[in-house]
Image (cartoon, rainbow, N blue to C red; front, top):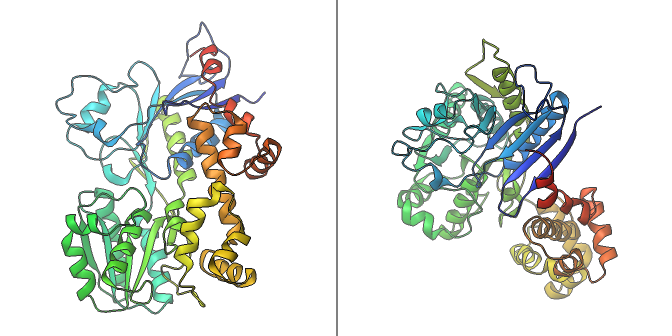
Amino acid sequence: MDPVVRFCLLNSGVLTVLVRGSRENGRSNPGDMKTPCRIAIYLPNYISNFHQIVDGVLKFQKEHGPYLIRDFRYSPGDLDDLEKKQSPPPWTSRCNGVITFVGRQPGMEEWLIRGNVPVVNTSADRLGCFPPSVHSDAASIAKVAADHFLALGHERFAYVGYGPSIGNTYRAEAFREELAKRGYSLKNWKIQSICDALIEDADPILKVDPHLGKELCKARKPLAVLCQNDATASAIIAVCLKLGLKVPQDVAVLGVGDFSIATDCCIPISSIVIPSVKIGWEAMSLLHRLIRGESDIPQDTAIPVVDLVVRGSTVERPHRDRDFNRIIQLIREKACQGITVHDLVDTLHVSRKTLERKFVEIVGHPPGEEIRRVRLARAKELLLTTQLSVSRIGRMVGFEKGSLFTRFFLTGTGLTPRDYRKMTDIEELQSVGS
């Protein structure tokens, strides 16, 4: 019989996956993997692909379990002054292995070793160092970016990323090498601003990195810019708009990740898709081998990327509506108040046919679908982070009747709101042996 998986996200933000499997005296035996083995997930709370990496871990678990997986999600400040910390990692004596996402902070290697279990990293910031890493392949990212920009006729290129990041350095170098093979040069603009969320205000970026505005202004146009991630791409778009530069006519901006930031940005971001589920699966596979005591473990495993989603930041959409940003803002602000496409039509004084045609041209789907997406995302958040009743949450996202909300949620997720919330039941979690 396949193991039964429970996915629990507590109000504290701690996620636990409980897998029912055979036990012997309540203890796990990681050697033969016949009884549940305890795996710690130590990922930062700010990375956009957290859930995709976990999905990859769960996919491997369903194929090779049983496991008991505990999440020790951390904030950036938790890794400060590791050299001075005397306490061991939080998972010490509580698991048989760890999947993490960490960089080259001073003292990191010694701190990880102190946990006394195998570790696999899912960041490219510790390439060549302990522990083994599974990450997206920088060379394939560079090739996909170069192919896209050159197909659009670009001849001038720049790269923007967080300067202290080792993974960012590898990605910039790979892009430089790919362009050099094709006879082009690259400007590499390192920034100190930490971009880990959608950025709509350029002022904080320009305050920390004033050179960025100067470089963008003086660069010959049109310019094609590859960014470290989608958040950085949103920052570049914000800076361009503040400087009066047109995107994509003057500056074409390409992100990496294809996360929600890409579609939430005022100008939807073309983005290279990171295979995060595959990264999670491969990381868990590697950890599985380490726990079993296997040798010949690769130090670095690079997962190729092949897909790119084209949006308005690199390809100018025809019939661009100057009121498009207003439409997006209205949906974000009023989707959960029950705004409809008819309301948008009345507000903007355009025909429904014109509104839907232009929205699809720019975003890739109709405005009604965008309203549903915003509502569903808010409903999920409330179910996972509050104790409000399902009917109250339904009203908060625009449904006066609970039956309509349940039908909406079931269509969007395959689960009823109550089934979705059962996965976060703390009492049920505590009733299961850990």
